[in-house]
Image (tube, rainbow, N blue to C red; front, side, top):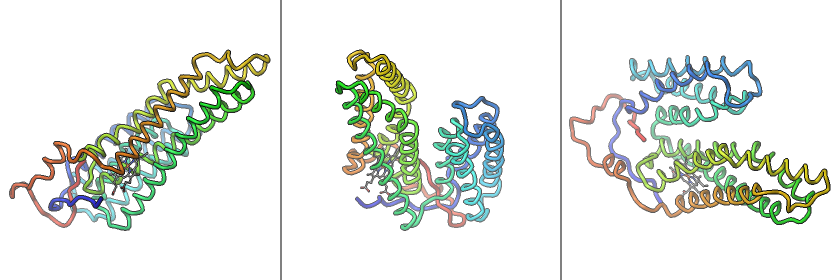
Amino acid sequence: MPVPSDRAATSEYSRSARVLPLVYTGVALAAAQLPPLFPPRFPGMVAPTWYATAVVTGVLAMVVWARPTTRRSAVLCLGWLQAVLTLGNAFVVGGGMAMFCTWLSIPVLALLAGRIGVKARKALLATHVITSAAWLGLGVMFVAMSVVAWTTTEIETARVTYELMVVFDIALLPIANFAASLAGIGLGLTTPWGLMRYYWVAIKFFIPPVILLMAFAFLHSTLESAAEQAARLAETGRTVAQIDTAADVVFWGFGLAMLLLLVAMLLSLYKPGGKTRRGQRLAAPRRPHASRARGNRMVLDV
Ligand code: HEM
């Protein structure tokens, strides 16, 4: 399906592009004061990285509010810098809060970038499709492993399967979730699809956070408890039948996550539902006095 056509471009930054760096500056300053959500890999680097992020987003906010005609390349440099700092904080330093803040940082960059060229869009789309497909593949693998662990009569097989699932659950699933959703958000904000303009995109937008919420709320802890029970039973020479309800919770939990990913995949391919009310409103022709062209920058909104 071709990308829908966009309405006439104007030059100023959208309200979202101006407000989001301000919001993120506040969030970064607050995050520097708060204790980490999870034990970081480099604890001494969490606060300095947050302060550096706050400085960059603060400068960015000043530029887009006070000097909106600043060269696009300079603004984008700052945009990339805050994105790299946030991604580094999240996935290298290990700051748990930064992981969630990537959902703010990437929109900041995408809104500043505006409409991207065909080549850049193809690269972003390829990243999104590859990471989404990898995530769905991991989902299928997790369901298969939970079936093996649940139905096996060998306690050793159950133990090894749950231990592998615990490791993959920490090492692979969050990366797949963030990579697919961030590339998706980047695509939405840099193309006329937007995030809340079409039903198929708007529904997909909520699927990665819902899966992440399930993982943090109960799936990961249930998986760990099943692995512990299997290890204890294996040590004392008992049978797999004694693993309690954890086994079915693991199966149904990962099963539901896989179904949601399947829904996301089908929504992407069939693109049902058309435009949301917001999409229709934004597509309506603008009144002449509402468009204030200055320069050649494009206004983008969610
Ligand atoms: C935050 C969540 C997501 C957002 C905002 C999002 C957004 C988008 C957008 C805007 C496109 C159209 C790109 C274009 O044509 O330029 C797209 C394509 C696609 N998305 Fe997502 N997506 C998200 C999550 C997912 C997930 C979880 C999956 C699957 C597991 C997925 C699978 C796909 C696929 C396969 C395409 C290519 C469709 C095609 O080109 O026909 N997306 N997504």
